[in-house]
Length: 104
Image 1 (cartoon, one colour):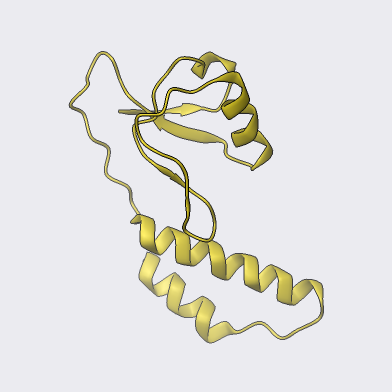
Image 2: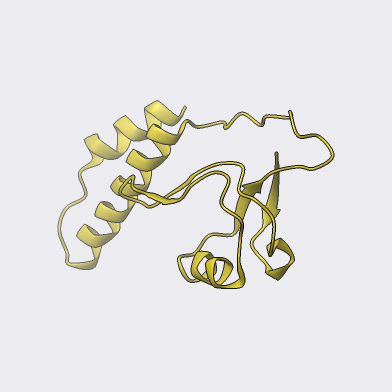
């Protein structure tokens, strides 16, 4: 697999890793062939890049620096923190600190 920028050049390529939403739900499963509509949906949702299958090195696996579970938790906490700040609530620094520790 390899990482690639979300662009029209990905039409017809297959996802190598499942893409999850911020709340941990699968958005697109590994193996899905990317279409123009799916690529546009990824762009609208703010995805900059995705893992696609690499035709030249099909057995190459790229390990993530942060596992998917931690990434989902961190994304949710960042969203909650930003929502709290937007309405003038205090930030739960303990919760933020725990997720930072799990990333480190």
